[in-house]
Length: 69
Image (cartoon, rainbow, N blue to C red; front, side, top):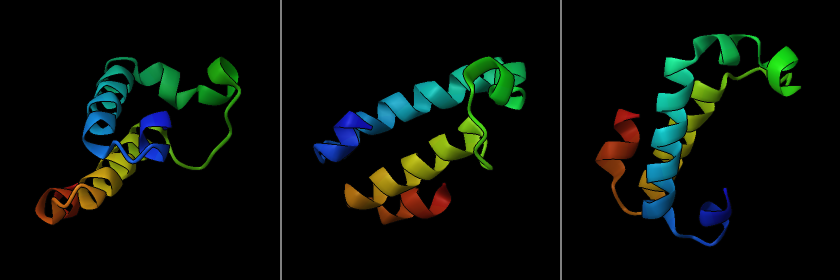
């Protein structure tokens, strides 16, 4: 998120992809995020990572990639 705030969108995408991969490997952590991470948001962390990748792609000028996500 720090890179996104600094408008370093291409670099931020790499971190969001790693986050997506992490929560894909550790689905229990995403499923029980309220207990494990004290987060009660509606969206899963995997969903948030994909949304952030799409946003950053769009901001970086890659509309096709953004729409894909």
